[in-house]
Length: 331
Ligand code: TYM
Image 1 (cartoon, rainbow, N blue to C red):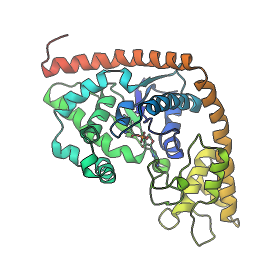
Image 2 (image 1 turned 90 degrees about the vertical axis):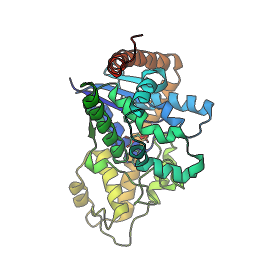
Image 3 (image 1 turned 135 degrees about the horizontal axis):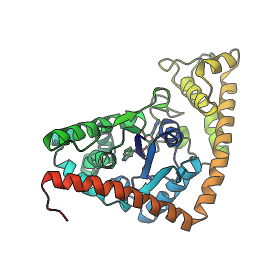
């Protein structure tokens, strides 16, 4: 079996629709065909300041959300990054083969450090993509399902894998990003040229999976569209409508052309009503399951402990090879 690995940060109370459509839905389908490892990068989360209590709660909530969305611990290894110390250890080694300029070209760092003010950006935020490369390379996955915004980090990961393999000895699998074109970038409902993100200036265009469904329906009804009337997929000229079509197509598993045909002669209000219905239908049972998983903390801890144990087996093995090849004494 080929291996798949991916991660999602525990940086807010809820995952959003972009996370789900861009990445998490594929995590769920891929666990059937691949040896799947999925994790919650809490060490990435502290690259920006976090309240400790909130971080712990969000890490648990993230695990509960992944289970509620269909990650099955019988099929997938689900774990928390900080419980597998090899991530930080490999990150150090990789940081020593990463160029300063190479790291400096990461656009996400540039964006985030501008937002924070350059003086407030931490070294951790700067080296974040190296830790991400370590997350991936430790497990030698073939596929890494992510959204478009992670492409550059995957490219760095591939470069570091190749560099290590040539400088020392073939050690790492060079992973492929698994980025699905149609859903790789879900847009903000109020500003459909920007990606949906928890750090947008306003929450009005954000669909959180755990929000009250009434709020979700309201946000969809207020989504920005355009001054035409035609329901047509045309991301260049009709960004808002196209985004709604992508969302509906994905949730209803219906091709966009079929939706266009169904909506012929209908208005934007009809499209929004359908999107709102589809979302409410989707999130309602998910929210119920999240509550169930969170109500049994002992079971949640057991799942994560078992996940960390399996992850450490694989990660420890890779790290031992890396340390040996680099020239460290055996421990
Ligand atoms: P994170 O936590 O920001 O996002 C989790 C996943 O959701 C995708 N995503 C989107 N996809 C489509 N449209 C959007 N608007 C949208 N917003 C977010 C992201 O691309 C991602 O796949 N650095 C990673 C976490 C990470 C990781 C890793 C991922 C750490 N180590 C190793 C893979 C492998 C991140 O911050 O994702």
